[in-house]
Image (cartoon, rainbow, N blue to C red; front, top):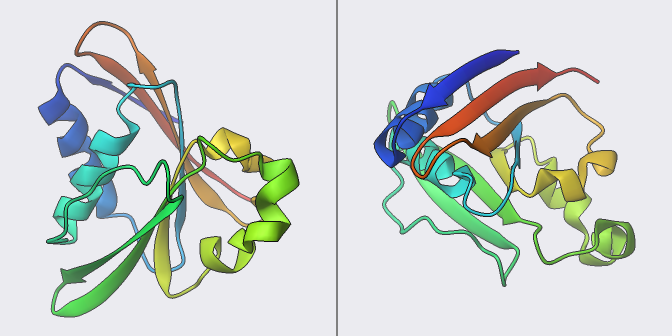
Length: 146
């Protein structure tokens, strides 16, 4: 496990840009943390790395956003999920999330991953955020092997 201390929103986004260098199609990244802990800021940094032109915001009410990025002339598809408003135990199968989440053609970024962690059956990146001051965050990340 690695630990980073972010002192600002800019640091948190910069972490996202740097972290994105590790990502490939088929990767899943689960974000864990309270409201306002910086999950979306990291995702915005990841999307900046992949040159996503669309506005990147949490899909809280629609569950999923899809973005197209470009890296080295290659198109990268990114699925951005927000599971804050779902009950994964009841809705996982009904919504057909399995096929979207584990799509080998996409990078999947999952806010509120603690709500679906029991359904993650493949290895994934786990990023946990904790607010330590008004603008400071403790970011822990690790690769979880299944």
